[in-house]
Length: 170
Image (cartoon, rainbow, N blue to C red):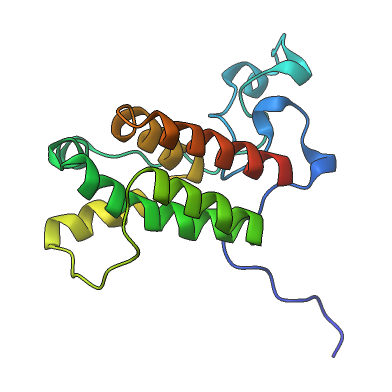
C-alpha cells in the first residue's frame, strides 16, 4: 500500500541533472571509462573532461584473450550476426523507442545482417555471446565499428548515428 515502487531492472542512465561533464553522458551504458584525476580530486578539465566523473562499481567487462581471438577468427558476417542482436537488446533497454529500433534496423541493413535466425550457437559461440553481453553498449558499438565494419563505411555511419541518437536521449 505505502512504500516505494519497485526498482527498474538493469542499470539505469544517470538523470540529465546529475551529469556533470561530457564524458559522463549516458552513464553507465554509454559513458567513457572513469576519470582517474576526478577520482583523486584533481581533474583540471572539469565539465569538458571526456572521461566519466560518476561512480563505477567495478572495471568494465572486456573480452579476455580467448574471446578476442575467437571474435577475430570469425568471418565478419558471422561476427556481426552474433553482436548485433546484443546491441539491439541493450540499445532498446537503454532507450526504448521507435527511433532507436529504426536506427538499429538501419545498422543491420547497412552491415548485411539477415533477420534473426533460429540457428543454435555452438558452445564456444555461446561463451563468446555471454562475454559480449557483459560489455557496455558503448564498448559493443566501438568493437563493432573498429573491428567488423571497416569495410562497410555506410555501416560505420549507422553506428555513429545510433550512438548520437542514444546520447541525445541520455
